[in-house]
Image (cartoon, rainbow, N blue to C red; front, side, top):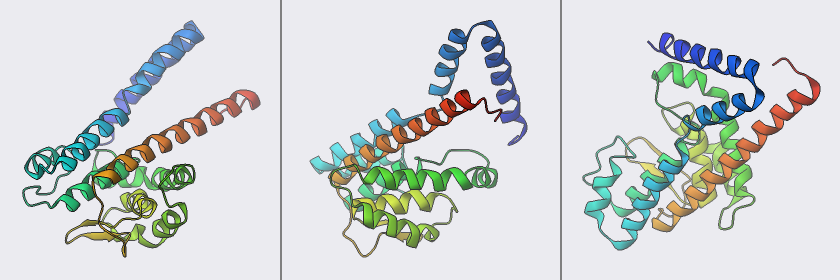
Length: 219
């Protein structure tokens, strides 16, 4: 299932876009842009995390715990405000690169993208107010191996360092320590970093496409 289903849908998408390219470049551009948009959920991730931050700021921890189940798989019934903030930030950071698929195959497919995403996240902290770029780079390199996933720790550690906080999943990892625990305002900074990283990745992708067009690269 992990190989066949993506291959079938990927093949259908390729056949469709190839046919549209033969038909007219504008048709190809419009349809592929719409198809590409369906593969991202940046706005939804931002909305859910922002809601957590807004409710957390009001002090309604019961509602925060209820809503956290949309972001994390851990038991949310006993989360403290700091743990809830950390969980929201961790979800934002992890989903800069991660996705839902067959776990081991997903790990293998994301080995390079996860590290590229972490570097882009670090580069984004250079331009964002309130972010600590130097610490983001140091924590990314020092703490990325603390998570069970070989990939998620890269962006999560970079985010922890950039925010200047400790992100902890009790019994599993602590990223960014020694540093204070996060609070509601850090969630907003994390989502801004998500958008900045996404924009940078889009610019890089457009640059690669432009170079392919200029030089006629076949790959």
